[in-house]
Image (cartoon, rainbow, N blue to C red; front, side, top):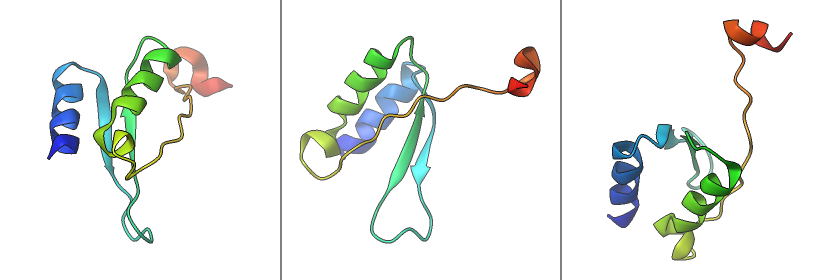
Length: 75
């Protein structure tokens, strides 16, 4: 329940772009795409995830550079 409440809070704060679980993945795994002002802010969000704090999950923080019309899709 705390995990879902955390997701709702992130969504309410405009920090959550999308989240979900990987279908057909052995065991349980998922992903968040966060909207933050810095990598440090994203790191704090990850550390505060109740499943991580409780020792039920780990995380890997990876930066994403958006490819769009404004940057000519990174060409």
